[in-house]
Amino acid sequence: MMGVGAVKENITAMLLAGFAGLIAGACSMAIGEFVSVYTQYDIEMAKIKRDKQVTIGHVGELETQREKLPNPFQAAIASALAFSAGAVVPLLAAAFIRGYKIRLAVVVSVTSLALFVFGGAGAVLGKTPVIKSCVRVLIGGWMALATTFGLTRLFGSAGL
Image (cartoon, rainbow, N blue to C red; front, side, top):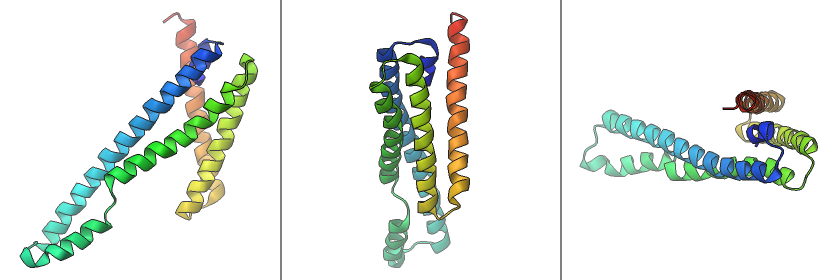
């Protein structure tokens, strides 16, 4: 949304880009998470089999250990839902504001608040320092916003 907002004042273009980004990002996150978790699953299963030298008598033990490993499908769905929840925040904020500069400011403000809150929620769930996590997620998000806006503005003004 910030990339399109850098070169177009049209709300329809910005919302369409936001929706496309939501879908593309959720799919990308889900696929990345699935591949990553499935790779880790395969590695852990190979290690379990090597360590136990599985025989017919150890099949029940292998099943127990397999059940403790993360499920790649669940991880993919959780990642897609988490991304979508975060992406819908600026999309909804932008949908109700017609003024271009105000819309950009609101998108940045609402996104900043969401980044801060999601950083805190992740810290609470992971039992890590809350403020440190909030600031890290917020700065990372600001870097992404600034990069997207700046590069699109640069390329858009160059007529590419």
